[in-house]
Length: 201
Length: 277
Image (cartoon, rainbow over all chains, first blue to last red; front, side):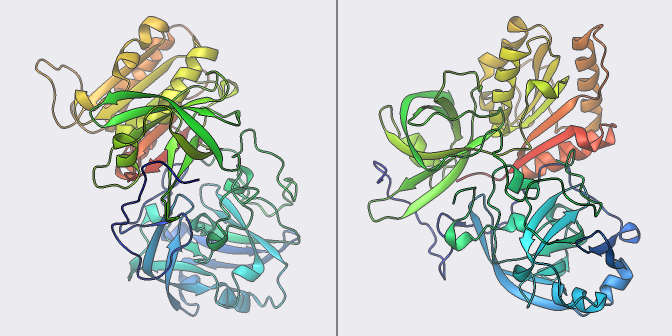
C-alpha cells in the first residue's frame, strides 16, 4: 500500500544493503526492560550447562579472559528498526568455550541467560563455527554496562535482542523454547533479512 | 524486567516448546484510518486511528507504523499507544513527537490528516505494561515523550482501579513541552489519590515553585513520601511499582536513582528510546 504523500527522506544511503524495514543509526541506542545490571568482575562468572542441568564448564573473569580471543567486524540490526554498521567486537567464540569445556556434540538449542534474569533462545548452529561469541570489548573498549558489559553474547546475523546483555551462561536444550522477548510475541529465530520480528513473520 | 524470568538455574524449562499466545500479541500488517489529529504541544500530535482489525492490548504497549513511497521504499517506526485498553474497541491513540530532521515524524506532523490510511501492526511489547492484577501503588516517571505509554497506564488505572494511589513525576524541558497537561493537571479531580508532579529542566514560568532539576534520589524520596500520603491510611504492603520511560540517559539516571532510594529491582520497569526520527 502506497502511503499518501510519503516519499521518504533517505538522508543517507547505506554503503551496503541493510535488512528490510531498518534505518541507519550512528549512535548506539540502549533497549532494556529494567535497570542496567552492574556486575563486579570479581563476582562475575560464566557457566555452560548441559541439557539435563549438568554443569559443563564454569569460568571466573580471569579464567574467561585467558581463553583465546577473537575479533569480529560486523553490522548489527535491532528489531526496533535501527541498524548500526561497522562495529568491532572482541571476545571468546562459543567454539572456543565448547573446546575449553570438552563439549564436542552440543544439543541442538540453547538458552542464553543473564544477570538480571533475561533469557533468549537460539539454535546452537547459529552460535558455532564463528557465528557467535561472548564479547567483552566493543570498538576497542570494555563494553559499557548499559551495552551489556562485562560480557554479552554477540550473534550479529540475528536481531540484536538475541545478543543477550550481561551474559551469565548458556544452557543447552534438546528442543527450542522461548526466552524473555520470545514469550512476549517476538520471533523464535529473528532473521533480520527475512524480517522475522514477531510471531508469524 | 527481571521479575518473573529467573531462569538462572539449569532445571527444565516449564515453558512449552511452542509459545502459547501472549495476552496481546501483534497482528499482521493492517490498515488503520486516521479519525482525528489532536495538537498536544508545539511538537507533539496525537493521531486517533480506527483499526480494520481491532486487537486487545495492554496499557504500555506500542504499534509499528509502516510508510511506503511510490517507488516501494519503506520506513517503519514504533509509537506507543497513549489511550487506554478500555477505549472503544479498535480505536487507538498514537502520540508522535516531531523530530525536525527525522523521516517519519515530520510526515506525521506535516502530511497526515483525518481520512488518511496508514499501515500498522501491533500491539507489541510485554514487560513495560500494567494490568490491574499487578496492583500498586504506582510511581510513574516520564522523561519528555516518554509520557505516552504512561498516559495509557494512567488512563487504564483510572478506568479499572481509580482508588489505586498513583503518582506521576514528569520531567520536561519547559511547561510548553508537557504533553497532555490539562488532562494530567485534572488527575486529582477525577481520582483524588492520583496526581502529577512536573520538573522543568530548561526553563520555568515566572513564579514556578516546582522542581527545576533532573530527577535525583532526593526528588524520588519526596515523591515516594507524597505517594505514601496519597495512599493515606491504606496499607502499603508492597513497594510501589515503578515505570520509567524516556530517553536512554534519562532512564539510566532515574532507574539508578530508584535503586539508590531502596526500590527493589524487580519493581522497576523501564522503556528507553532515543528520538524516533
